[in-house]
Image (cartoon, rainbow, N blue to C red):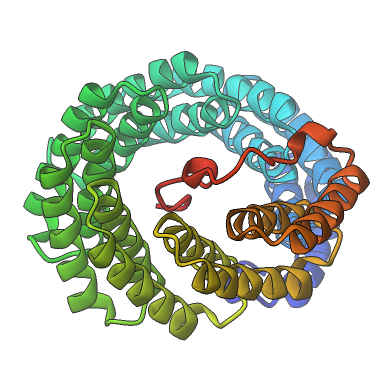
Length: 387
């Protein structure tokens, strides 16, 4: 059954698990350790099928049997609790996930060595939820504890430590503690270079993150160096037409734009657009984002015909992929109205603003969402949202 499970033959695995469970109960009784293990395996099958109700029922039964057979404090009990935590996390039930993870952590701390890898996993699982909820202080406490545990059973230059440090750096970045973020990212870069060498996707990812921090610190020249090095590595490893290449191209364009080099910015935005279309298809949300930025650069330069061309292309994609009443459609219509306002075309201004307002209202938005104050370049996020 486990062999079938591992290769993804879930139906065959479940059939054998159920047969094994029936035999085990008959031979050993309902409260035997093997019954608990088999119930957990069956729960995992339901879990992988996204059959959450059945999975939770079996995990809870496995937990009850496991506690009866092995006691409250046993690694098998902790394992079941953590799998339940993973399920609640996937469902988005973060309160239940934290509760179950914390129960598992208490068991692990009681029965495992203080530097056991399982403790690190549970600490980072809880930390991830705190980070998602914006509870950054609580998340940092757990991630830092996880690093301390990792350093007791791993070398200081192990890639797993770099993963946890990256989470710490990201929290500092989100908290706008850019100096702290930079310091941690530099540690991550050192670890990854020691582990993988200079040419590796994780090294490129860290260079991109460092570039983002330097950009926020307004150290544009250093940010550009970091982005360019990351771009060179990604092109070498991934080829010219990969989404990760497009993301760095986008960020390079943004630095050029921020420093007033509009021609260079436009060149890199167009390169970004070419790569996105090749890698993701012509109607991907990244393509829309880049089209809008190109449109806004043209608008900033007063090249309003070209601005409208790109805004309308973005609008067409949004209507096809999101529907005509999505709030993002209203935002693009709002931008189009502002371009027409710059060009003095009152009829087109009213047409765009009226439709934008109608869609905003359909989405329960206030009329204040409509921006009729004129051109606002910073109405879109500067940096790529998924870097």
